[in-house]
Length: 116
Image (cartoon, rainbow, N blue to C red; front, side, top):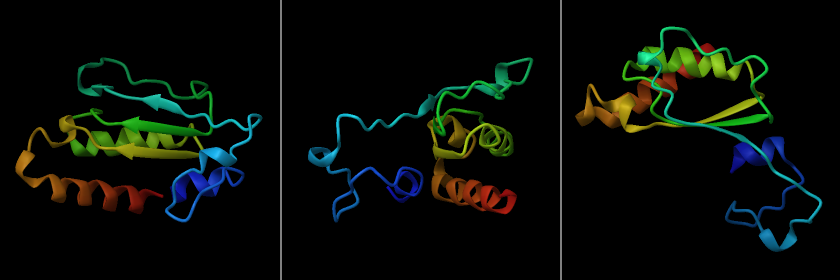
């Protein structure tokens, strides 16, 4: 919730960090673009992200690539088209090393941190 709070300060959060829906005005809106199941390994041409965004936030819900470095590369490309990207890893990202999910997530997080 810190991510949402930093870019949408008018949304009321309660002490547990969740949105207090009773205090949300009917005039407030919250939007994000949902990106899921890209499977970029099978595309012959890269996706052009410029101009595709309809909001400031992209939620990328996994299954980008079975190659972690390609996943990181694509997340960085998406990040140039949005103010913020929230990434949730999918099973495809762990396909080649399903027994090392924790290590894979740490690898992705470290690489993304080093590119920003």
